[in-house]
Image (cartoon, rainbow, N blue to C red):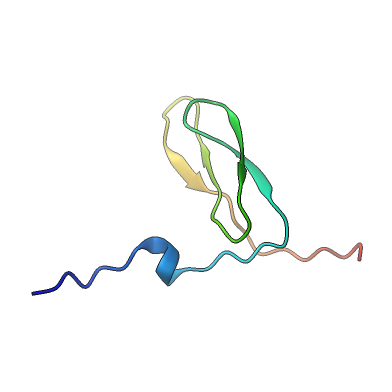
Amino acid sequence: MKNSRQPFAEIVTFPRAAPATCWDANGVLQTAALDAPRFDHDPATGRAHLVEESATNLTV
């Protein structure tokens, strides 16, 4: 029987027109690529939290 699980990135999309920043598990500021999810890490627990949220840039 074939495993029917799909990778997270194939199920959910994260459209973003520009790179964005987030903190990794070591407390280092990282840049997330275009259309890639961002995860911040809690420095006390090391747990990851999804940063993405819906937003509209009104300064076009």
